Image (cartoon, rainbow, N blue to C red; front, side):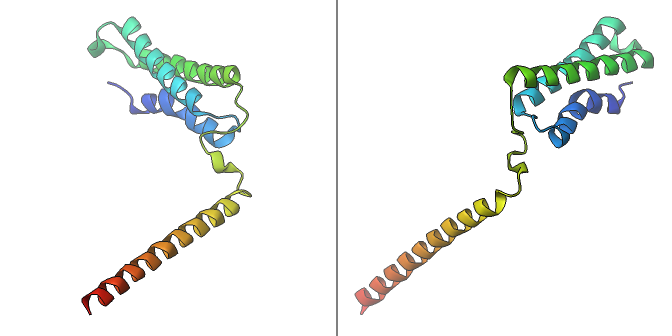
Length: 132
C-alpha cells in the first residue's frame, strides 16, 4: 500500500519550505526538485520492490528517505548553479514596493475607465442628436 504522506514529502515539502523561508527560491529549482524527488522515490520502489503488489512498508520508508534527500540536493544544486539572488516564486516579497505598484495600477485603471465612460457618453449624445 502506498503511503500518501510519502508523495507529499518527496514532491512538495522541499519546494514549499524553500519558497516560504529561502530568499533565493526559484521556479526552476522547484520543478527539478519535484521531478527528482518523485523520480527517485518511484525508481527505488520499482528497483527494490520488483512487483509493486509485494512491496513492504520498509521499502516505502526507505524510498521516501532517498526521494526527500534527492529533492533537497537537487533544489539546492539548481539554485546554486543558477545563482539566483531573489525569490522568483513570490516576487513581491518586498512589501515596501507593493503600495507604489498598486497605486500606479489603480491610477491607470481609473484613467482607462474614465476614458471609456467619456467615450460612451459621447456616443450616446451622438445617437440622441442623430435621432432628433
